[in-house]
Image 1: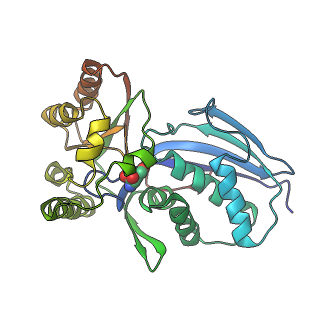
Image 2 (image 1 turned 120 degrees about the vertical axis):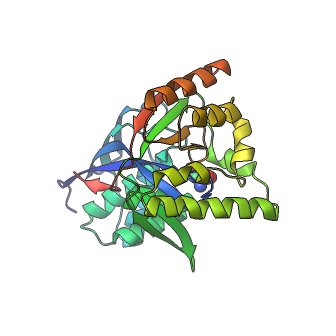
Image 3 (image 1 turned 135 degrees about the horizontal axis):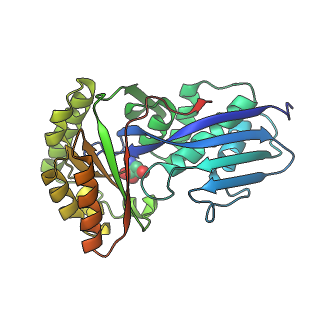
Length: 301
Ligand code: HSE
């Protein structure tokens, strides 16, 4: 076992759904966890930054569980590892922190074993572990992704979004667990709502592929999950309405929330202020971050 090998890499935050693309569209963001990993005979985890207090530092850590899974798939015994994580991705805020943890464990362990698996195979494994392929696709491939399942496997295509596209994140000071945000969704949807979201998901993909940021104005609206999940976010309707009035191209729940992701090419200060003000009016604190898409997924540094 090559105990001394140290792998250093970064993993991006991701935002899934982007409004109408429930479980199939996502974007990698220019916010990264920085990881150093090496094999050891025990588990040792150091975390600095986001989640440093609440994340488990033992077997129960998702990075470790994912690394262990990779070793199992490779038919190798797993004893332990040392992980140093500088974490910038907020935890349970709808910014893909669980996908990042899974990507960290799988990618790092794969590197330490001299890459028995391809990136496509790692993504497939990650999408199974997470239960939906969208965040995992963005975490592995970067850019804008369309993700789906085919014959039981996770599949994805990735391409660059418009180069002028900026993103304002409004991250409120409460958490929404994806399991809960999925449990409140209906089992069946009215045909009109499905057609409504399908058309917009296609338009959103066309906007990204054709580099037409303006088309997002009509695309970023959903009837499959946002009307239900919006109820978990104080001021949701006003955030959308006033964000658009402030010049946004689209205002949506990031992943399963509670972060609000706004697409814009300008008016970034105005949009940030609106988000803070509306949340404040609804007795909720939030921080805002201006970012942009990440062109790459998990990668060595
Ligand atoms: N597509 C998933 C959902 C993303 O909306 O439940 C979770 O981050």
